[in-house]
Image 1 (cartoon, rainbow, N blue to C red):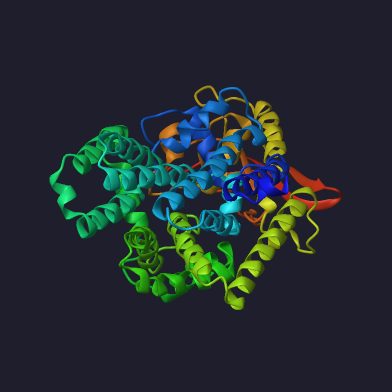
Image 2 (cartoon, rainbow, N blue to C red; image 1 turned 180 degrees about the horizontal axis):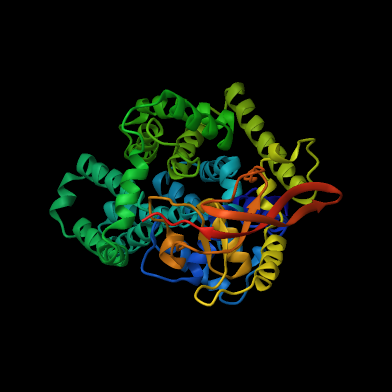
Length: 488
C-alpha cells in the first residue's frame, strides 16, 4: 500500500477521491445556491443558449434533473467534473514537463485543491466547472498538435475549444492566449491547416450560441459587454473589494504567492511550457483585473487563471524544494486547506458559529424547499379572478431561482426592472392587476406600512422560521399582494 501511494499518479488519485468523499458529505446538507438553482431551471428549459450564459451549464445538469430533483443528485455533475479536471491538469503538466519528476504534476493538482473556492465550486456549480474541464482538454490537444503536428490533435483541440465556448464566453481568453503563443513560438504553424481547422471546428460548435443570440437581438452578447464593462469610470473601491474577495476565496497565501510567481516567472519565460502556461494565466487574470475596476468581479470568474498560476507556483516550489521557507509555505498551505475542508463539513452539519441570522453568510442556503411548499399551499387558497390567475412573486431576480426550482411553478419578479432577465423570457413580467403570493426571505423584509414590489396592497399571510438543531438559520414571510402596477 505504501509503495502504491508513493507513485505520483496514484497519490493524486487518492487525494482526489478523498476530496470527492468530502463533497459527498456536504452535497445533500444545504440547498442550492442562487446560481445552482438558476442552472437547474436551465436544465428544465433546454435551449440553444440563455440570457446570461451559453447552454452547457444547463445541458449537463439535464442528464440528472430528468430523473431527480434532489440537491444531492443535481450536484453529481459538478462533483464529477471537479474530479475529472484535476486529472486533466495532471496530464497537462506531465506533457508540458516530460523531463521533470511526476511529483510536479501532483504538486500542481494539490495546490489547486488547496484553494477554498475551487473546493466549493463542486457544490455551488457555476459555468467555470465545465469551462475548466474543456479548456484543459483544449490545452492538452493543442500542445500535442504543436509538438507532433498530428491532424487528429487539431481536430480534438477544435472540439474541446468549442465545448469550452459552449460553457462560458471567457473561452475567448484561452483562444487568444493560444493564438499569441503560436505566433511567438511557432509562427510557421500558422501557415499550415491545423490551427485554422481548430478554429473552424470551434466556430461550428458554438453556432447554437450565435443562433440563439441572432433570434433574440444579440441579447446575451449585449448583456455580457455591459456587465463586463460596468461603470465607465474606474473605481478603486470596487477594484479593492473584488481583490479582497479573491484574496479570501483563493486563500491569502496562494493569492499573494500566486502574483509573486507570475512576476518571477519572467526568469523562465524562454521556456515554451512556462510561456504557454503564463500566457493563459495572464489572459484571465489581466482581463478580470481590468474589469474589477469597473464592475464587481465574482471570485469564480478568473478561476482558470488561478489554476494555471498554481502550475507556475508548483514549478517554482519544486525547483526550490531544498529551501526551507518554500517547504514551510507548502506545508502551511496544505494545513490551511485541510482545516478549511473540516470547517465547511462541520458547518454543513451544524452551524456552530455564534452569528445572528443576517450575519450568517450561508443563511440563504436553508429553507427554500419548505418555503416553496408552503407558498404553493397558500397560492392554492387564493381566490381566482375571472381574467387573471394568481401567481408566485419575488421582489428581486436573485430570489426567483430557488422558489421556481423548489416549487416547480413560474415565478415573476414584482418590480419594474428596465433590463430583461432570463425569468422574463421564461415566465414573462407581471401585468397590471397581477396578484398572488410574494415570498420574502430574511434580509429582504417589507417594512411596516410598505408593500412588496410594485403591488398596491399586501397582507402578511404567514411567517416561516427555518431551524436546525434548535438554531434559527433562515426565515421567510409570505404575503398576499394584489393591485400590481406595471409601467409601460
